[in-house]
Image 1 (tube, rainbow, N blue to C red):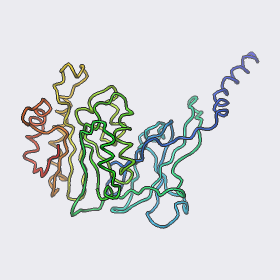
Image 2 (image 1 turned 90 degrees about the vertical axis):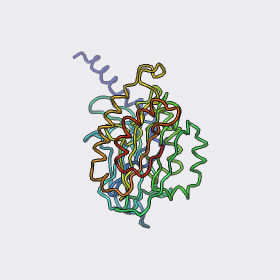
Image 3 (image 1 turned 135 degrees about the horizontal axis):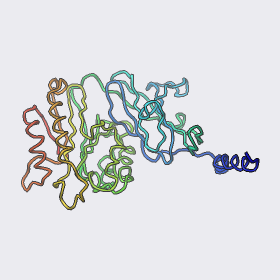
Image 4 (image 1 turned 180 degrees about the vertical axis):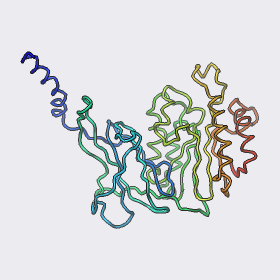
Length: 340
């Protein structure tokens, strides 16, 4: 190979690294979170969002007087990469193998990724996270095996009124009394861009309660709207089949429904984007399995969250769907309470 050509290739190969060095190492900053998802008797999931791409993990310690830096704390990584550490801005880490009814201090940590030049050269920035000697770290508490009562808050139809949401949860001491909080749909009027999920859902929630109190989400009809509506699931720990699921606190079983849009799929306002009828049919099939499960049959209290209510006066198509697809199943399943 011509020596001048070889030197040119070598220089071009190191230029990205030199540029990164001149600009200085990047440090990832948390722009939202952390917030808790899917807390069980032996695990909890933490999510948060950074301003730049990063590799992230969670460290935990017992909730006692021991200094967080006393030991090398166990590290839990985002397992969505199936053996590879994901690089991104939205981080989701499940901490498992824990004891029931136990509180743990936790901190979220990350290392910024400045560039990924090829298959083998990742340019990392600075590590960052919560300095345990400067702040009171949040606590996550696993569920008890059983509960005599459960306290929770439900809010819906805020429609991007952040000031109202913050007013409702301004009493942080009272927020700690809730076992969990449910956003029951239409927290904004559309998802034209994904930043709305952060600004109108997750930032107020994580500032006020969600770093220690689990947050659950039911999709409303307005969460079906907007260019980035599909991205909602990236910000919550939904099951793979979609944003409908169950969770339980001892003898209390909770069912979160996806009640769909309020208009027929081919309505002009839906702009040809919806195929919700077969999707809701799949959900109905799943629901039949739920009410036949041991968890459902053994529950002493069964509570349902659904944004759109069943048939009402002056009903829309969404109410009709609830009545035709889901009510025949739920009416014979011993539901104690439905919140819509």
